[in-house]
Length: 298
Ligand code: HMG
Ligand code: MG
Image (cartoon, rainbow, N blue to C red; front, side, top):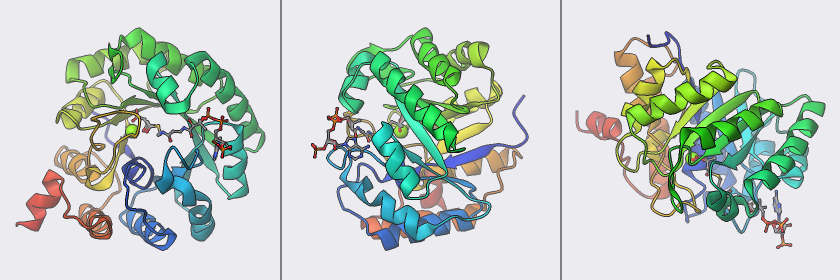
């Protein structure tokens, strides 16, 4: 049965924007996050402390966190790839971080320039240090259902990395279909495999919508008992190291589906659409998700 309440992790300001060539100012990003929070979202991924060469749009994450400051009722998190990223994040006042490992060696190499084993060794140091500072850590596993370089990925491959991140102390594991190739039965089989290892309660799912499968995959994962969903308002997004990957599943499409099924999220769809409008205008385009277009024309 479907969970009665689902937690949305809004990744638009990070995953949504990281691949956008037009750099938004710190003011605009802060306004974007404020409008998202106003819609009722309580978890927002604000940016990343990665090499500015890897993701130029994320280079102002420090200023952004400083501008936003601590907010009650809002969990802001940032991506960190190594100890350097963690210490920069801590200095900027971050209270929640995420590390990101891959299911395949090729994606790991392209994305963070090291093997899976090297990345896990690095992340265990990052997580230990984060814990010492009392901050929460999430672990991503990318390419869980397919890899741009290696093709099909077996559930066991993704599950092994999820288990390693869980064992080193990541409180939540987000399973990423980075290039959006998954389909519902494969998604469900993956959840069953990973949940068999580390339990359902700390699992999140992160779908990109490249092949239009994201909502169907999310529904399959909800049926399997997952209750944390990553999404990006307006369906923004893409990964610089995942050729052909399109945006994340649009938050408004997820909220519309959950509202229709009577699942609580605490998010107001009308206010969320305003956040989507705002960021689309700032990027110089029209909101493109199905739900945004349907409301705009009704
Ligand atoms: P490297 O070249 O192996 O690292 O990159 P290095 O230690 O040799 O450093 C190279 C340069 O980066 C140096 O600068 C360092 O100072 C700098 P230089 O001397 O050349 O001027 N550097 C840093 N700068 C700022 N912050 C840092 C940092 N570390 C080193 N933390 C590295 C390795 C991991 C740094 C690089 O590959 C990197 O930044 N990768 C991140 C790529 C990225 O952001 N990808 C997108 C996010 S993952 C994703 O989107 C998937 C996800 O959404 C889930 C899904 O969809 O499935 C999460
Ligand atoms: Mg992603």
